[in-house]
Length: 151
Image 1 (tube, rainbow, N blue to C red):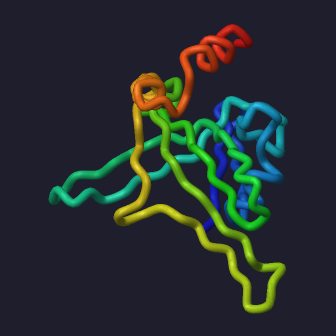
Image 2: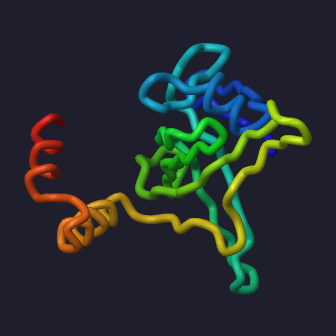
């Protein structure tokens, strides 16, 4: 699946052939998509998906990406930052992963998402997740406070 990165500044489009190309060749160090024409970062990828409810469509404007190092060479989770409009700020977190085994015999690039796939969470849902992790003892309050102090 390819990605059409659209620039709001110069109105040009840049094509990324697949998720690996997008993440390695079209993002800056902060995870923003970079226009290959003007080098601007006021960019987005537009996506729409049919919902199960008849006639309903989920529209989203992907504004950037958070890449997560899994420590496994072939498995790469990432989170798309989604907005509700072309000019809007990110309001959602859309979780994905890809597995790239193309360097192995009979390997392929698999993009994990879709039916039964990951949820899209609101930005504030991250705090709910952290709250639950602290309550379960997975994260300590001290670790969360230490992290927050570094921001």
